[in-house]
Image (cartoon, rainbow, N blue to C red):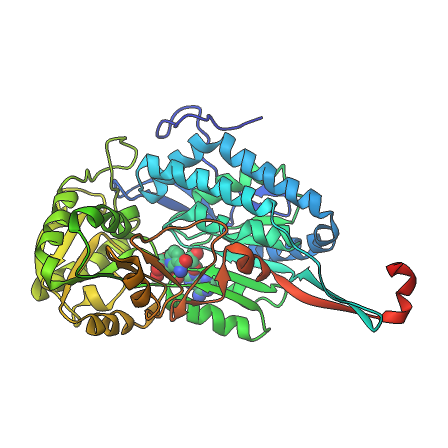
Length: 491
Ligand code: NAD
């Protein structure tokens, strides 16, 4: 039976059961202790989540290890149907999941609903993926097949900006390829993962999928445990270094989706009125808390003022507020630490550039910052050099395109980038000179389950999504048979 209403729930509404259990070895279990979950729109705790002990993480890993043999040898058709059942359960409970996501993450309810639906879409897409084997040679000399085998127990560690969707980038691929999984969400957004755990508990065999929640203190157990074969991590570059160092000791496979400081370059032939909306959305979606948001905007001097005016006009049209209010188009920063960080970057920007519109909102207990446009700013300001991960966009003037490309590439990050122009051929030439994993032309932040995503430089290691991302959950196994011994089979 569906335990949650499919329509949005009322905050702390009478019949609503907030998820309060982790999933370990097929059982919904309490944590060793508990922790408060704060609604970032109010700054007030609205729920209590389980907080795992180190022992419970060990139990989750042990149960995933024990479940591996049966799951990895199960029919691929069975694993596909489990993924589809998960997608169905997410869709059936979309209203409750979206409400919870807005409460703990802050994003507007319509965006939360899109994230939930995207989660189901990613599960469904991977359920249909092809896994081979591939025949490399079929001759009298030899018959060679390339098979893909599971790696083992996969640790899935995700941040707080898209708690459900980023999990859905990883979990379906890990499961389809026969691995078992331990999921660990961020400490400030544990509830949607716990509700997901409750929904899948009756769908997935015991131990195949475990969900544990921590106080931001137990991730290193997952990344260093000898029984974890792979870590699929999304988070900051600083944590990524630690993940990779821990994983090295047992040669774990790692996929690291880390920070970004995506540049967008507006060429001198672009039409500001045509591109402003796309740029604005890519910079301010999710209150700027997206790894592949536009974080530096390089604008040719000839259209700088005009584009600035267009963006300011869009910024002033945004309704900032509590995500649960359907009129809200931008929610708060997700947590106090991030809020304080962005305020610090904003204060620095105020001394090095010109704040044209926006700024922090002081008369609220929530973590709100208005969409902020900062003009006349350049490298040397924290807003340009660091990953702001908030709703503050620097507009950097340039006159020489080669110089703009050099500056765009000067960042330690290399996640995404975009080029905006009326001439796609010209934009393509610029795009090919940008050092990053994804480059868009006349758009930014466009993602789909069949399109691989990867970071260059300090933005990461490995690939997610698409066929390439799926293969990262597998180990190659070559089966090579002497040709004359399979002669009969070939006939
Ligand atoms: P974070 O690195 O602080 O935390 C991410 C996750 O790692 C959390 O679950 C956290 O509890 C866990 N963690 C913390 N310390 C750990 C350790 N020592 N070992 C293992 N796990 C540990 O990141 P955040 O602040 O939650 O997220 C924001 C960052 O994530 C930004 O830098 C953003 O760019 C990045 N991000 C990247 C992508 C991408 O696809 N490249 C997507 C979204 C977010």
